Structure formats: C-alpha cells, structure tokens
Length: 113
Length: 116
Image 1 (cartoon, one colour):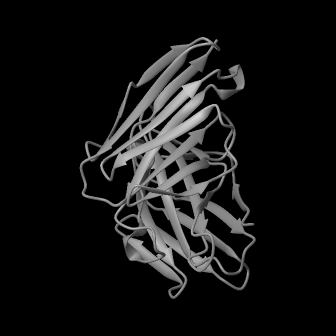
Image 2: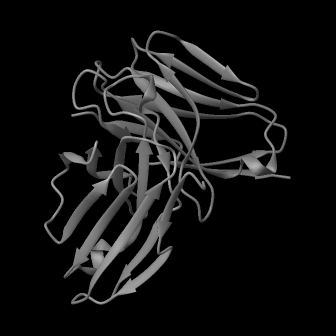
C-alpha cells in the first residue's frame, strides 16, 4: 500500500522568511495530494491540494509543487507570519484503487517573531 | 469548523466503561470518516461510510463499533478499551467518495479520549 514520508518533523523560521516542507510517496498510482494545517485544539484544515495533472499550484502565500517522476511534493509558505505556526500534514491518495488518504507524520512549524 | 461538529470534546473512561462519540456534519455531504490521531504517529483511517453504508474497515479492533444512521450523523461506540487507545479521534466528511474533485475531506475538532 501507499506510504508517505514527511520531513522535517519540526521547522523553525523567522517571521517573513519562507518555509518548505517535503513529502515523498511510494505508490506511483497516487494522483491527489492535499495539505492540511492543524492548530492546537482543532481538527486539520485543508489549505491547498494538487492533482497529478499539474506540477504546481499557488494560493496567495502558499504553493505546492509536485514531481511525479521522483514521487515527491512540497509545500512552500512565503512571507511567513506568526499565525502560520501549526502542524502541517501532507497526504496522498490513489484515486484508482483504495481511494484512501494516507497521511505523513506531520511537521510542527514555528514562526519566530 | 462549524461544518463538522464532534461531541464530547474530551472524554475520560475506564477500561470497563461503554461510551459513544458523536459526529454531525452540516455540509450536506454523503461520505463520513473516523480517524485516530496518536502522538507522533500519522493519522490513521478507521472507518468510511458512503451513503450510510460502510465501505472501509481498516482492520480496527471490534472494541470500536461505528454506526451511521443517516448521512449527517456518525457514531463511534467504545467498549472495553485499552490505555493504548487513548488518542484524538477525528471525524471527517466529504461530498462524495468516488475519486473525483468532490472528495475533499473536512475535519471536525476531534474528541480527546483518555482510557485509564
């Protein structure tokens, strides 16, 4: 089955700098990759997703890139702000097979003022 | 977050107790999910219901029993749990469960369960 690895497990950046979180997946059939943000005491919230027919997607300060050949995808946050501090999860799903989301282990992002 | 609500938010129970977790979605979705979130582990899918029918049981022990009386409500009945079952239990819903663009999952805030 699908296996998703996420790095780093913790990330600390200065306010205004960029943050990058990377994920790799094992199943080449996977073609849907969402990113979730989880703040303390809340459930995960979808922030951006990408499907395999595109290589990059951007929404204001957040972007996701996908390299299907290498089977990895990344979350990029620019001009970070204190409210970006949270745990971020990547996930992958095989839309042809089990159709289950498999999550990475999470990255705790801290933005230092 | 008001789209998917979960009660209770916190629950402490003994190993011999029976309790239930409740999830309600106000989004008009057809699919609902239970996930387990343990410290330092990825989110684990437990159950999937699509149009009230269970489509996925991810090898979950029988001490966890789901119930989906309609597309808006999902329960997780708990009995004779173990301390290692302590975790955050998350409910999610999506418009469909068919592999298309309507599969985006929306999560509730979770129930923090502690088994003594």
